[in-house]
Every structure is written in structure tokens, then in C-alpha cells.
Length: 397
Image (cartoon, rainbow, N blue to C red):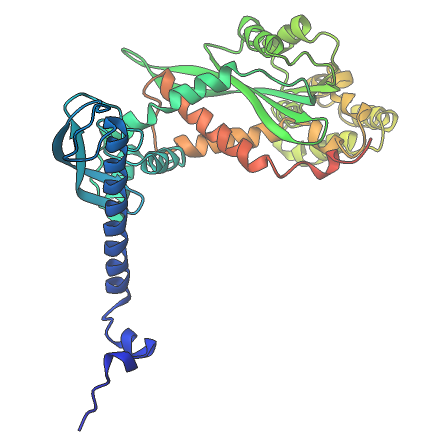
């Protein structure tokens, strides 16, 4: 004979036996949570209306500021799931609810989730599919696009904010992207400024779209940085890839700050001027120049490299020789900093994140979408770097 336990004698183990699957368990929990959230929301909306009208239901009062007008149902997508037929109290005169604004169908947390997935590289169509599975609401690609439009205000604030003049190093570079035009796809350049502060924090300071990397475009970008507060009081070095337009602009905006040519870009140029059979040996010798302990030793190593390759590859040697002073300026900085400021690698890594994000897209639909996505990637990187300063830069030098 099987003994049946009294309800008061049931243990947690006994109760778990009644659960058919983990999915059923969590489904039941989620249903109860949604029910509680719905109850709390409806109670809060009712209390808010009572405060607005200054009188309870069915009461007479001279202080009354309006009349009730029943209820209407609304579905609301929340981070807990979709609440069906939420009872919204209504007044005869329009009033603005602080709890649930007019026409709101989604909790702001859902909108943030949509923006985060969009910026992480998920296509607008896939965002809708994922949210349908997770939260039970069918969000179209058009709705996702409308939600991401809210990024425009953040982008404008980022472009207009005042800058603190606390940077000791500035890395400047641009990235070329494709944007759809009226009849054809055309190129847009995004000019970027990456800075390292006096206490070692790294940050992408600003970016701007431009039609080219000409002197005029770079001068407008740098002039904007200067006007917003980056006057260069603590700047030790500005690192560039050697773009002639950028260098011309620097002469106008930051003429008294030393410039450093990127060694990676320079050696890439040298590679195009030597035969494949000599490439490994020639480049290895060139790398020894920037690996020297000080500027005098680096200059000596260049002369040795020139003597070895000058006759065979005069164009390759001249490529380095004509910019040697700017290639060696990083030796004037503290030794702990040099590995970070002899190239533009830091800003190039940020560009890789942008390219990874746009990989699912053949090109941008318009200039605004460029701003949204580039800002999203930059903002994510800046947030992740806040607590990760360069260790080499945090020492007293």
C-alpha cells in the first residue's frame, strides 16, 4: 500500500518530483512574475490618476481637477516578457503619465537591448527575430530602425561636448567607408582622434565624417577639437600615419607639438620598394632602428642599414631617411611610453572593431547610419577602457 503524505509533510524534494521539466518550472515562475508586474503597474497607474484628479473614485470634492473615463487595454513589452491587456485608467481631460507615457508599447530597457544588439553587429531583421524568441514580442526590422534613431541625440551630444585639456599623446588617423548615394555608392572618410591622458587613460576623443583626408578637412576637424577645449597644454607628441593633408593641418592648429610618424605605415611603404627575396632581411634591419635604446643609437643603426641596402634599394632607404627625424621623435618620451607611441596601432585596433561591426553590411545606407554605428563602437570602447589605464603611463615620469 502506497502512503500519501499530508501537504504539511511534503519536502522540497517531494515538490521537485512534481516538476516535469526545467522549462515548465521557469515558465511557471515567469508567468507569476509577469502577473505581479502587471498588478504593480496597474496599481501605480491608478494611484497616479487619483493624485492627478485629487479625488478618490465615487467621491465628491470641490478640489476635484477632472473626471475619470474608464479604462482601455494595452499590451506592454517589458524585460520580464509581454504583459497582455494592461488596464490603463483614463481621464476625460488628457494628462501625461510619468509611469507609462502615451503610445509607449515597450519598456525603455527593451529599447536599450535593441540598440545594444544593433551596435554589436546584429542586423535589424535578426534583432527582431531574437527578441521574439526571448521576450515574445514580434519586433519588425522597421521598428528596430526607428528605435536606433534615438542614437542621433547621443551622437550630437558627443560631437558638441566640451573637452578637458588633459592629453599628453594624440593619435590621429582616418578610416574609409562606403555609403549609398542617390545613384551610386561613394566613399566617406571618418577622421578620428585617440588620446592618452596625463594619468594614463586612453580614449577616442572625437570623430567626424569628411569627403577626403585633405588639409582642409583635417584642419576643420582639429580646429573643432581646439575650440572645444583641447588646446594641447600637456601634449608631448602627436602620432600620425604620414598623411600630407593631416601634416599640413597640424602646422596650422598644433604647430609647436612634436610629431611622430607611424613605423608600421613607414615599413609598409618600404616593403613596396624591395624585392621579395630580400624583404625579410631588409625589414629586420629596419626594425632594429626603432628597437634601439636611445635616439643616438637609432641614428647609428639607420646609417648601418643605409650602408647595407642603399645601393640595392635607394628608394627604400630614402623613404625612411627623408622622415627620419619624425620617425625618431618617440625617443624623446619616457622609455615606458615608447612602445605605445611609435605607431598608430592603438587607433587602428579601434578601426578593426568598426569594420567587424559593419561586416554584415555591404555599405551604409546614409551618413547618419555611419555616425550611429561609429559612435556606438567608440562609446563601447571608451566605456570598456575607463578602468583599464595603460600601466606604463601611470608611473611618475
